[in-house]
Image (cartoon, rainbow, N blue to C red; front, side, top):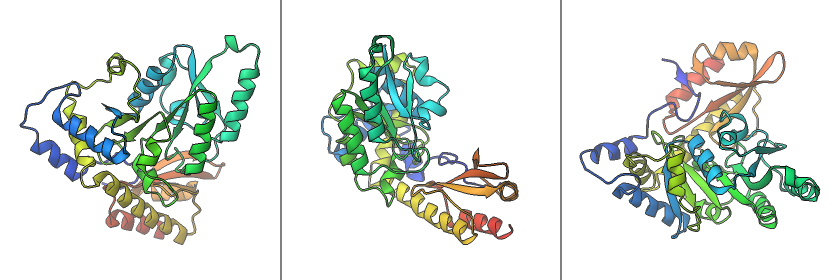
Amino acid sequence: MKTSFESDYNNGAHPEVICHLLETNGKQSQSYGFDEWSEQARNKIRTTCKCPEADIFFLVGGTQANATVIDGMLQTYEGVIAVQTAHINVHESGAVEASGHKVITLPSHAGKMDAGELEAWLKAFHADPTLEHMVIPGMVYITFPTELGSVYTAKEIEEILSVCRQYDLKLFIDGARLGYGLASAECDFDLAWLAGHCDVFYIGGTKVGALCGEAVVFPRGNAPRHFMNIVKRHGALLAKSRLAGIQFDALFTDNLYFNIAKHAISMAIKMRQLFTDAGIPLRDSSTNQQFVELTNKQMKHILQDVLFETWEPIDADHTLCRFVTSWATTDRDLEALKNALATL
């Protein structure tokens, strides 16, 4: 089988997660989030986030988390502001719009939202005399790290949060790859700081060592009233809640979540050097996603030995391709890539 850098969820779970699932498999538990491991995981997350009052819900995947949180926190007439490249705008098959909430888009700057542009848009919107006929913005959605591998600084998030507070908007941070953003050399804050600078975020497990699962965190105990009912209405309530709870219990024991992220980043740095040594240009990214500019001839040649994702065409002769590392990436995998590049 070819070595694959297609995504960070094309392997199974980290062995310690699997071991925890196996060692607890013979035990009975309560369901729907009331099992002992889900509660243990919540307490570990609360401690790490330094948010003792946090409301935490475990959902299976990112699209579920995004659609459920947005629908649960917005009024029926409200929409969510995101950049054009945002996952909820591009790669979720209209899941947010299906619940009746328009995705309002702003320009993307390497995947990031600009606070000044957000403020200018909101100022113009509220000055429009016909706004009673328009979708009212109720939330701002950003991803950390972004879909293009860029990382917000603390200052940038503070500026976006300040605009949200000025216009009474909720700030939602999609953390599908949260661990990799926090492990990036460009990140100047930790998980506790992030929890204190938004209204809701989620900790991605699917892409960071779990079989599946995301932990939705309302850091100040500020979950919408009856949020569990909202989760149920979206078909997102796990009867066997232990499936997610056990995994997050393992991920937040002995810093496993953060160690997984650090390993993937270290592998991505080595990978980046391989492309640099081969004279192949890359886009800026300090996370586990590396975006590489290949000629179409190079792309087809490398695909004979190594799998990766073709992201988008650059021009008639070049394609932007994505190579992703994870907990499972090894030096042997990188050696396979090095050998493929050596034959170009």
